[in-house]
Image (cartoon, rainbow, N blue to C red; front, side, top):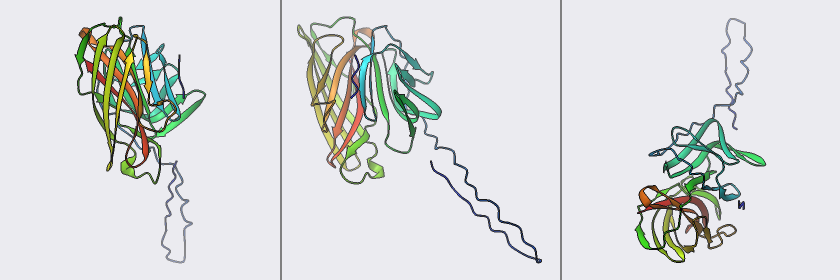
Length: 269
C-alpha cells in the first residue's frame, strides 16, 4: 500500500582599432555554464540487504509515500538511487546525510533528476528542493516484553517546504537532534520520539508517541499527511543482534513560521 499525499552567461569582447582598420566584435558567449557539483555526504557501515520483507518511506516535493519495497538499487558508496518507481539519475547527482548498514539505508537526494511518476523533477543542488528516503527490513516477530535503549540517532537535514515571509539562504535547511524510546508489551510497541530542529535563528520541537501493534504497522501522528504543523510517522524495523530500528519521517514547524521535512532513525538495543 502506498500513500502519496538554467542560467546563461554572456561576455562582450572589445577590440581596439588602429591603422585605419577594424575587426568585427566577437560574438557573445551564450553557452550554458556547467551545473554546480554538489558532493555526497555521509557514509554507510554496509550496504542495505533486503530481507524480502522490506518497506520504504519517501518524502519530497508534493509527495509522502510509503509501502512495500519491491525493488531497490544502492551504489557502492551507500547511495540508494532506486526505491520502487522513484529513481535518482543524471550527471552530476548528489545524495547527502547518507547513513545505514545491512538493516537500513537513509539519505537525502539533493541534485540530479528524480523520477516521480508521472513526472520527473530536476534538482540543481542550489535550492532547498530535496527528497528524503529510508528503507528498512520488517521485524520477524514483534517482541512482547522489554524496554530498549536507543542511540543518538541519524538525521537527514530538514529541508524547507513552505511558510511565511522571505526564505533566507540560512533557512533552506536546518539541523535536527533527538531521542527515542521503545517499550514492548502484549499489545505491541509503545514508541516515543522527541525531535528538536534548528533553522537559522529559529527552533522547533515535536514529540511523536504512539502504539505500534504489528511488524508492518506505521502510525501517522498530528495529521502528518495533510497538516501544516509539526507531525510525523513512526514505525519499526529489524536491526542486528536482536535490536530494532525506529524510522520517523517528520515535518517540523519552526518559530519563524516555516515548515520543514526530514527523516530520523534510531537503533534501540
